[in-house]
Amino acid sequence: MPSLSPITPNDFQGSDVERINLAVQAAAGTGRRVVIPRHNHAADGERDIWLLDAAILLQSDTTLELDSCHIKLSDRCRDNFIRSANCGMGITDIKPMRGIHIYGVGDVLLEGADHPRATGDSGKTIGERTFGTDAGVEGESQKGDWRNIGILMAFVEDFSIRNLKMVDPHCWGISLERCAHGLLRDIEFASGQVRRVDGVEQTILNQDGIDLRLGCHDIIIENITGYSGDDLVALTAIPGTRGTAGDPGSTMVSATMDRSEGLDEIRNVIIRDIRGYCKGGHHIVRLLNTPGVRLHDILIDGLMDTSPEGFHCKAALKIGDSHYGGGVAPLGSTYR
Image (cartoon, rainbow, N blue to C red; front, side, top):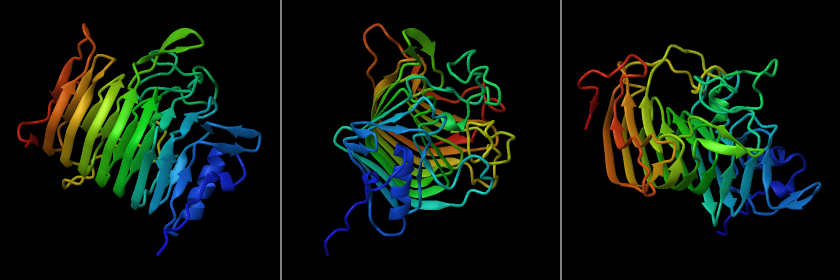
């Protein structure tokens, strides 16, 4: 049988992100993939860039092909590049999703805004330690949160993200919460914790590459390259007290409270062929769990520090820390 024809946002009207999301909705349940091409046939003229004012929201059983395209956050955007549609602002009951696949063909670039409205995680105040044009703006949150993450998915099984480059995300590049049975492969990062905005050097904190958060398991991470402002690859099982999903006061959209009975442990993760460095001077690979949640059965196969001459990360691999959550995880909760 011939393959089904793809759906492209060029078939729809509206802003760039409205057209992309209409294409995703049209493809849902049909078996057809969504293709974002290089050329954007916008109403105001053709261009080679797609500007996002809000996140691309992916449904279950969606394949998103990025075909040699350049996707950039607009200066109006205070949101992710891409998010699983089951989570977001005010969504307190996150329904499980499955079958989300994102892959690039050719050279694919996801780039942060020229003037980010907010950066950093929920522990940072914008305009103080980290940059954001929303600093001091009445009615806008003055803290970073999960909207600053590049690609964010929660409670998704059977997923993949492949073959793309991400430059200057506003916080972590890719963050997965309570996701399982997935693949992250052939991803390059370029962020340095400092960038020029209108000719002035500004600090952008928490620019990790890939983060696996509470409840992630059975995931392969391989062929990750480039440099990041913070940890290039991090597995962080750090439970907290926030029990409500969709809260803008957190860097986790699915809430930080431990679901107990081992549901939020991080396990069965393969990290293979990591070649990069942390330009912000932190770590290349970090494994961190705090009391109450286990982290185990993690295989690291191939880790190369590509730091330029005269530059040193704090560590190529760091396990544990005393400065997060309830302190150092007790003996036996981090193993194999």
